Length: 154
Image (cartoon, rainbow, N blue to C red; front, side):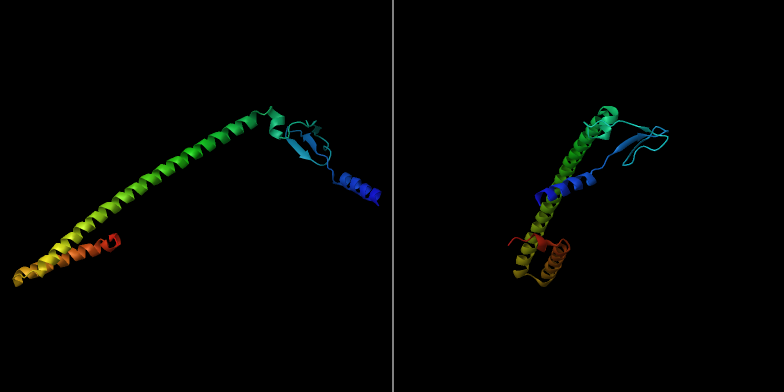
């Protein structure tokens, strides 16, 4: 039984093996195939050591150039990522400064509203009280327009 299994494995390996032929056509092009070279083309001996076709044809110069281009591309990509990170940091800083300025403006408006509200509560002549109410309404509208409720601290 073991001998039969061994024989089956050997025959299966023989059937699965494939030979590759390298042929140079009449126009100088190189063609690889599983069939022997057709008429009008010349068989080229394949070197078994280097695995890359690029390394076989030009002594590895194309592969070296490719590796150098790949390294340059990688360097450019890294520089681009660094530039993007710096730009994002500048954008965040600008947004933070804008947010802080807006919060400070809302604080000043809130202080003004509180002062006008306190002024309104004091006993004043009717004409003066109406003028303070109008100013208070204007400050509250400005606070509403600037969405100062977003900058409130709990």
